[in-house]
Length: 177
Image 1 (cartoon, rainbow, N blue to C red):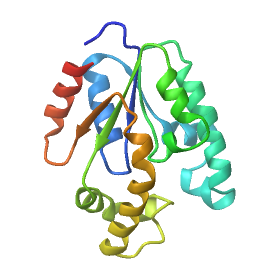
Image 2 (image 1 turned 90 degrees about the vertical axis):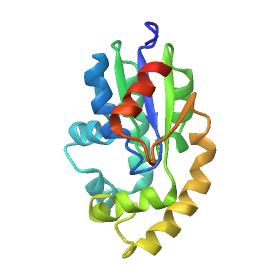
Image 3 (image 1 turned 120 degrees about the horizontal axis):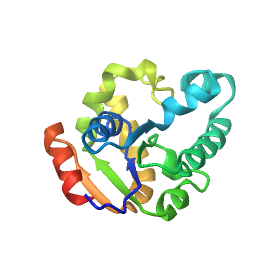
Image 4 (image 1 turned 90 degrees about the horizontal axis):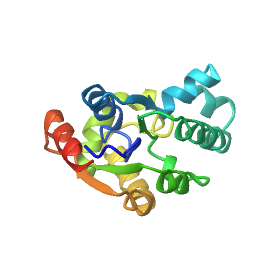
């Protein structure tokens, strides 16, 4: 573990494992853990899905940027699990890439893996809640990944999470940072 690293950003599509991995590794390396969506819900007093429904995605992206900035500026050792779209909007990519003593990690998974993980939680994820089956979900993910991978690929480190155990991902991250 590099002693200079103060912030680890976990980036990737919904279902890639950002929250699970972030929570797990934070305990191992004694960093504070923040899930950006949960932080937004805490600060706004509403679920992300309610913010999307009551306001709109543009409003959500503005406050997402505000809270990413807020978390990034906390002077502590931390892991920030971003939302799937976070790096693609506002100046979030710049915040992530230019944070001092930070590293960004793209948790990458195949479309089939993401679809399998996400099919059970369609109703909890506002961006995919309108989809009704796995084929629609795969098509949606394919299109979205095509649009978003440009931003994801700018990460300092890329880790494929498809067929790898959680403990092995944690070890890999510990070894890389």
